[in-house]
Amino acid sequence: MKYLLVLLLASFSLGAFAQAYDSDKVNKRAIDAYERAMLRIRDGELTQAIPLFKRAIDLDKNYADAYLSLAGVYAELKDYAMSIEYYDKARQVDPIYFQFYNLSYSINLAGLGRFQEALDAINSFLSIPKLSDRSRLSGEHRKRTYEFAVQYAQKHPAGTYVFAPKNLGDNVNSPTAEYYPSITINDSLLVFTRRGQGFREDFFQSTILPDRTYDRAKPIGGVINEQPSKGAINISQDGEWLLFAGYNFPGGYGDFDLYISYYTPEGWSLPENLGRNVNSEFWESAPSLSPDKKALYFSSTRPGGYGDADLYVSYRQPNGRWGPAQNMGPNINTKGKEQAPFIHADNATLYFTSNGLPGYGENDLFLTRKGPNNEWSIPENLGYPINTIENEGSLFVSADGKTAIYSSDRSDTRGALDLYSFELRPNVRPAKTLYVQGKVYDIKTGKGLPSGIELVDNSTQQTVSTIQTDETGHYFITLPVGKDYTFTVNRKGYLFFSELYPLSGNPPDSTYRKDIPLQPVELNASVVLKNILFETNSAKLEPISMIEINKLLQLMNENPTLKVQINGYTDNVGKPADNLKLSEARAKSVVDYLVSKGIDAKRLSYKGFGETKPVADNTTEAGRARNRRTEFVIIGQ
Image (cartoon, rainbow, N blue to C red):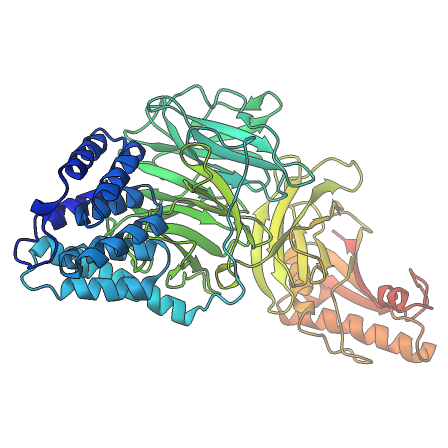
C-alpha cells in the first residue's frame, strides 16, 4: 500500500506547520467512522473503507484527514481521478496542512498523465524547509521522473494517436493472472502463462480465428505442463519450438533455467535444458528467440553483469548447440533490472523492461534497434501512456509492426493481470515484416534437402539473413517489407539456386511461398542466372549481378575440376546480327570476371545465341525480360 505509506509518512511530519485545520475540533461521530475505516484498511479491505470515510466527511465537511485518507485509498485502487478529487477537497480545507501531501498528490496527477501539474506539486513539496532525508530523496526521485515525462511529451507530441487497450476477452483471460504473450508469425496461435494455485504456473494456447477473435484457451499439450514451477514462455515464429523458464526441472543447474520443447504430432516434446552456455546456477528467464532461430535473448542475474538482472544473448552454432551467453553491454544494461526481452520479427527491434534507465518511476518498456554493423542503439523509452508510473511487463508486437499485446491489471480485468491488445504509437514501431516459406528439394527425386539459404538486399548487396533449412528441406524466413531480395541456396553436390524475389510490393504480414529445386552437379546440368544484368545495349555488368556471379565463383572453387560454358541470350529487339554479337560479349564479360578472380581460363568457355532460342513470347516486356538471360552449363567434371 505504497500511497497509504506516503500518507502515513506525511501525518508524522506536520507538527512544524501552522494550519487552520484543527483535528481536535472534528465531529466525534465523524472520528468514529474514520477509525472504523482505518480498521478496514488495516485488514486490507480497501473498498469497504470507502463508505466509512465518506460517512465521516458527511458528518464533518472540514475533516481534512478523512479527505486525505480517502484519496489514499483511491490511489491504492489506481482510481487516480477520484484520488485527485479528494486531494483537491483536502487542500481547500487547509492549503498549509495539505502542503506535505503534495508528494502523494503528485503521484496521482502523474498517474493520469498530468505531468506538468505533478512537477509543480513536487516542487512545492520540495520547498518545505527541513524535510527528512527520506522525504527529500523520495521527492527528488519523483521530480526526475516528472521532468523526464514533460520533456518526452514535448519531443513526441501525441498528435492523433489514441491509446485504447482492448481486453482479449473471456476465451483468453480468467480470474487469475495471464502474462508473457507470444504469437506465431502468421497470427494463428497465441501462447501465454497463466498463474495457478500457489507457485504453480501453466502454459496455455489459444487459436486465433480468421475474424481475429480467440478460441477458448486450453493447456498446451504434451508433458510440458507437468512440472508446477515454470514462468516466461516464447514460441518460435514458425510455431515449431517453445522456449521457457523452469524451476527444479530434472537436470537443472540451480535457480530458474531455460528449456526448449519441440512440436511433435503427439504434442510438445519432453523439455530439454539449453545447457551450461545459456544457464547457470543463478536465475535465467524471459527467453525470446529471433525469427531465424539463430539468437536467443534472455535475462539473468548471474555475476559479472552491470546490475541486478541483465540482458544476454546466445547464438546458435552450426552444430545446433548454443554458444556462450554474451552480456548485451552497458548501453542497454544498468545498475537496475533489465528483463522481458522481445525480439521482433524484423530481427532488428528489441523491446525490454528496465527500472534503471530514465523513465516514469518503475519498470518501463524500452526499445533498441540493431544498426547496419549489428550494434544496438541507445534504448528509447516507449513513452506515456504505454509506460506509466506503475510497473510495465512483457510486450509482444505482431509482424505488422503495429499491433501489440501486453499484460495489465486495468479496470476491466477479469481478475488479476489480463492480456490486452493495442496499437503502438508510430515512432516506437518496428519495421513491418512479411514471411517467406517453402521447401528445398532434389529436382529429380523430389526429396527434401537440408540446405543453407542466404538472402541479400538487392539495393545494398548486403546479406540480411543466412539460415539453415530443417532436415526435410523446409525453411521459414521473416523479412522487412518494402525491399527486393536475391535468394541463393547452396548444398554440396548440387548446383546453387539463385532468384530475385521482388517483395517490395507485398503488404506486411503476408505470405510468399517458394519451393526451390536443386540440380545435382552432373554433366549437361544447367542453371539460368536470372539476376545477371547488363547496362542497356552493353556488356557492362550491373552491380547487382555480382551477387549471383560470386555464387558461381564459389561453386567453381568448391569443385576444382568443374568446367562450365557461359551462354548468352537476348530478346528480338534490334538486328539479329547485333543481338548475336551482344549476347556473346555479355557471356564473355562473365567469363572475364571469373578469370579475374582466379578461375583457370581453361575451365571456362562462352557462346552467344542472340535471339535464336527464346523461352518466352517476345511480344510482351515480361517475355522479352525472360529471353534476355545468361546461363551456365556443366561441360566437364
